[in-house]
Image (cartoon, rainbow, N blue to C red; front, side, top):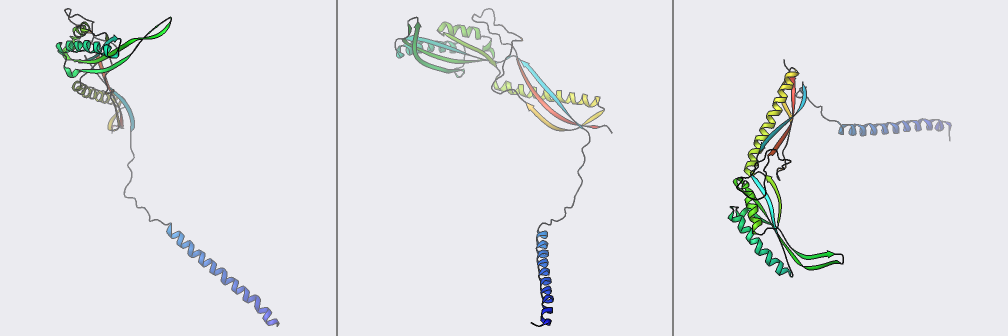
Length: 269
């Protein structure tokens, strides 16, 4: 090989290497341009500014309490009979319970207000020092009675007449209010609760030398719709002296609605 060809070979190799590097750089830049372009997003143009809220938030609790006498009374009457066979125990029970129901109807109780709540026929067991043994069968029948308005005052006589007719068990009583009364009660208590909250908020704003701008949050709490409990007797109404039977004290029902309101106060300009 001649010296001239030996000298030209390194130069040729260098030129090829430079071209290869340039090609790689060109491809890399092209790929970066494509990737970079796919990640670009259009600039967001602000259409307005968010108004900063001035003032302070103050939570207030309002309570509405309504007290009234109940207009609904419920209790349960039961008849328990025994017999040597299930049929004998059941037949005696049916005869006596029919007299009890007739007594309730004669006292003015609406048939729709008398509901059978429990029926059973079970073995009648007798236990002593020698052990337990079956002594026939026992039949049980229970009805739940609901009295409203004026019949509540007559409940001692109604119960006494039912016992005279043959009822052997008495369970209850529990007081409540009728559905239409409950609706009016709820509305009145709700109005009182909101008025209480508004009065408290106005007084707080006055103390702080501020004013109410708006309401930010409201939550209302109602008693359970399943009934209104009577925790204790606060005002009793006894039956007339001429009425015989167990004394029934109606007491007083308290219905409470609570509201939680968060007000926004702002300085007085």
